[in-house]
Image (cartoon, rainbow, N blue to C red; front, side, top):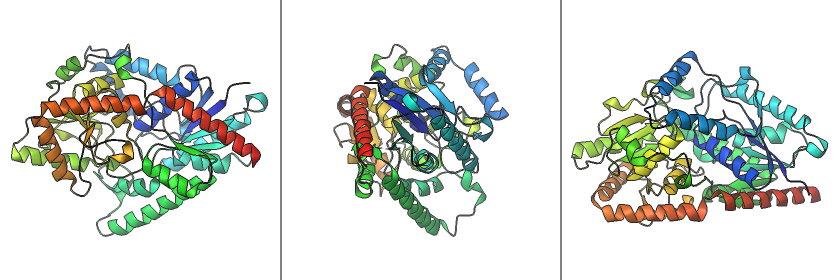
Length: 444
């Protein structure tokens, strides 16, 4: 019996150090490790503007001798090594890697659709794909509509719920992005409601049209089970154990290279888009600074340079910005932190930054518990979504004063990673599901 031939289709730039792309990458590597033949299809690496290219050059030149440049090269190689990779035409790729609505997305999705059609046309007979694993709504919509009735079965990997996420892009700074051309002051409520309804309609359509599904969270599993009659499973996102990596950096050395005391700072690690609700972090930092009650700094770390984003934190009280140059450096900084900060209150998505935090044994301060498998006071501190700033300030102050609590939560975080997020069990479950989807499709 020949191995399963899978096309992993992601409507986004790739490779890229963002959560969706990391999940896509690690799923591909894990499935190949268990015998599947995996081919990738994405926008490709994206089109860099001159300004971003100069920023990238400065970023590489700033690597501080802890192995960042080597790690960046290793990570790029890992994302692409041995995979056939269909890429959208260069002229259709978006210049910005930012997530969410943008004027460039329709052209990017047109290029994605053209590439998907060509990939399926070139893979026929014994080389035909057994299934398409689609990553995010655009890839799923395109696969269901463009590939035609004789397409391979589509297994939808549900990165998020659009009913929750679309309106979340209205939050945060508007200096950059799709919404900066609109005056939302008088119509934000109506627009939010409208976007939520549109998102819910898309979620339900995708659930009904997909041949199978993989949910990452409890809320997305509920939606898929309600609106889909096809096989599906909840499989939390996996990542390889960073504590076993040969490329692991010394976490204390990395923290000190950024002027931080190991174990005495709290870290937000991730992208800086509005849907991440970074305004909560800004307000909590300002309140802690006003009280002068916390000596543990709040640090916002990103692969983006401060000069390339609206989130330049030099003038924000109580909040410090750090640029990192590789995911290995980010993991080391995360491992050295007292806790990680997860700010999103919307349901549906699973932050890869949380999986990273659990894997290195760093507890999270977050707003969701069961949604992500967390337990308050066991492996995380759970804040109130209706009082986000006040409850986050309280959690920071509590954790700062209690070393025993920090240690106990860290042990719980590591145990949760080992229980839910290792690649081997996840790959076995996904392959079993794909085989079930293929059998079910053959019967229909």
